[in-house]
Length: 166
Image (cartoon, rainbow, N blue to C red; front, side, top):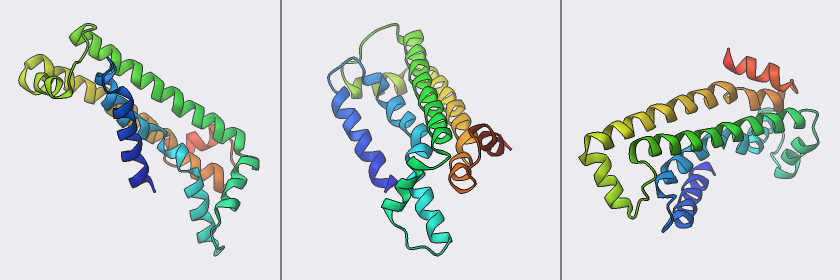
């Protein structure tokens, strides 16, 4: 499901941003969308839990997450990942502005040639990638175990994040 969802969202983002000055944010938005992946996968976590218990998985039963005791903690953790995503987009834009001022990008091929063909472009891309890696590591660290813990153990958001960090 995720292998289909991510490319579709990426293509939709590309289509929406095409022709606007947001083209430099295409990659950060598409890559940053993965920061929200653990929250988007909670239904799949619950379906997997049902299968482990020998229950025939049903999406309707997985939607019981909304009414569970952990729903507030799941929402809180989802909001935390959304804030991390928005911070990533702002950081990516800041890095772009630091290297290229506020110059708009008129074509992706021209932008790509500038990235690959100039020292400034390569330095920009390395800094951009390093910043993105930090955001990815933070998102992974706080959520790799958190959502499954919230679904399976009905823990608090704090306990789930601390467990994930360990």
